[in-house]
Image (cartoon, rainbow, N blue to C red; front, side):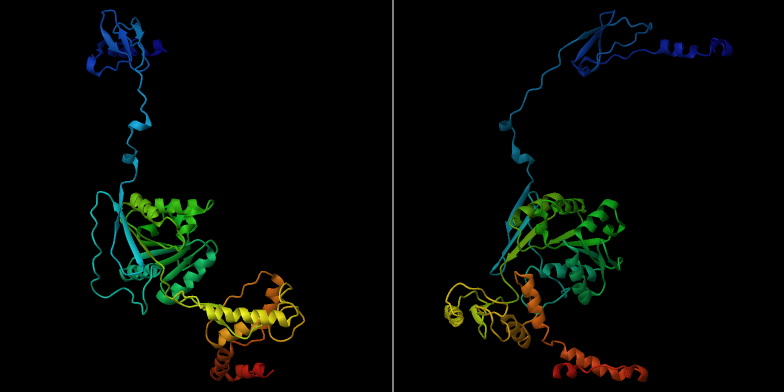
Length: 416
């Protein structure tokens, strides 16, 4: 190959090698790991591998001398200040109304600034005393007023469907995104499961650039051993310029959770807690075999001992009439001993609830067989008479041919 192109073709490499001069490295910059001693007793830095460098004459005549590496002194845990590695977050108490506690977690280097009073009209007004659960609804109203997008997440699909129906009646511009159904994905308010939001963050969805608020319902699901990682990853991946609302009635370490959020996204996180219920909670007893309800705990949490004793007396009288004061089994009709006739206790309770407009109502039983029996008994009641009358009156707007379709009036069912 060299004869074909001439001997001078590759001589350029030799000329370049000869004209190259080695630069001397100052001793202060040479690592004390290994030294190379040349023929002229000059020391050259050998580097970590202590390789012999090629000299100007092209041979490897340098001698390599290895030295011991310096030992790194071990630092005990007692010499470290672990506080320097902990999140630098402080918690401030905020003055609030009676029966409510308010704390705010913020970076230690920031100064707490009290909340400013609202200027102008509120994004949404409520005709009742507010509680923390309305924070999410107000955040949605505020984002929609400012022409921003908001995401509402829930742990299960059934809850997402329920929240979608409720918010659609309130705001209209609402969409739903679950693993099964997608409705109006371009809406300003999107209701979805937390897994869907995490997938959007993984993909880098363009929607996240327009989101101003993210609401996490039932945030205590983060403690779940299997699914908790979904909430952790979602919160970590969310951008810092997004505001958050976390809802939970059972989270035990709300203060620590707020400190974690403040450390992650470098923004204050408020913790508001109250035991106030907008809907009064009352406890009633319906003695099996009785004919009425007995209020035992009122809306103020006071125990009504006289009503409780009356209910217990009805139970004792019913047991005595059944042939024994103790033991035995209650049949689905609500009486002891079996073989009794008349409407069941569940039938009486449901009828009374519907007459007093206490619905909706949930009937719970430990037996599948009793659940079927109760359903057959309650099926005898008619709660749709008003709706049926409205449908019957609506026949007047139909065409003549459609009006001839045979139908039963709602009163026919009542008469039967």
